[in-house]
Image (cartoon, rainbow, N blue to C red; front, top):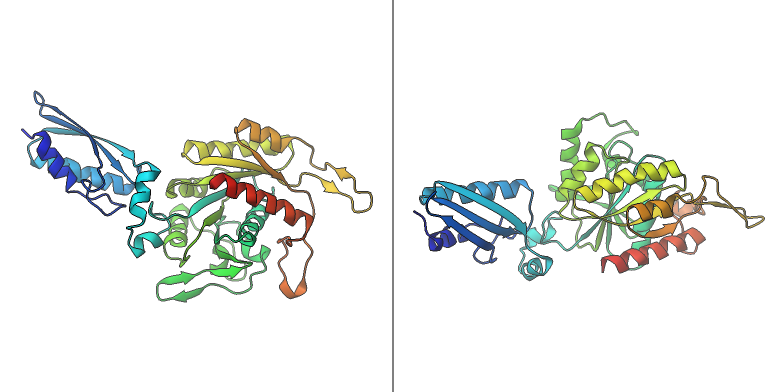
Length: 351
């Protein structure tokens, strides 16, 4: 019959798959219960990240070592270390751990930009929010994760593709934002006809094979709706804050609520709503015309119990042929100022 001290020694010698330190070093063993009459051992273990393939592998190792020591059956519960515990190990992280965006050791903050349906300007919001954060001095990356409907390179006026150095992909930098997109890897705007598993591998490459360097924020322009690709991304990220984009129309807001609900179901926090195409302001009269109705953004924010971060009017940027970027608003443009205000709110929310 295995005793409590043996359990501590055997389980404690195993490694946290993310922190790469023994469970004894991370003080991971929270509870031990032994039922001698049934020869059953129950343990509660804290690790850096739960609900992953790595957790399953660790679970199998725990069962194996305890059964080899004489336990007839083993019960395991996992929980995540609180942020303050992970912070203790971040300073001790190896260079490879620190560079892995999906590692709990990485300090980058993920911001997913979602919408319930296409055509609401989600990519425009993603691009301009990324640029606004960079103008405020933040180190920003942007993944065009809308694999089927990639548009970020064209919106930002990016003509060249990323460089390949060895096995690493060097993202393209524009307006202070590091960008990667499926659009860089297809020829002549060809449609993407791949199925889900292949797309998952591409997204994994975007996280693991791109040389992002040090980032404060990584924004993801998600596919519209709640399909497989969007769900894969939600499950892939260690933690993500989400912004939901809608138009003022009540139906658009109703559909967008589904995207917010999926974020909540996958334990991601919705930090706000952005209402795009909120109104059209006449240059001659200065009057606002509510082309798509009113109230969708505030109503959605109330439904998702979050904040309305901003309302973006209909309009287009001032184009500059020398520095052409058809969807990026200048810093001095009125709409560029709205995005700056939204970026400041995001920074304040995320700390």
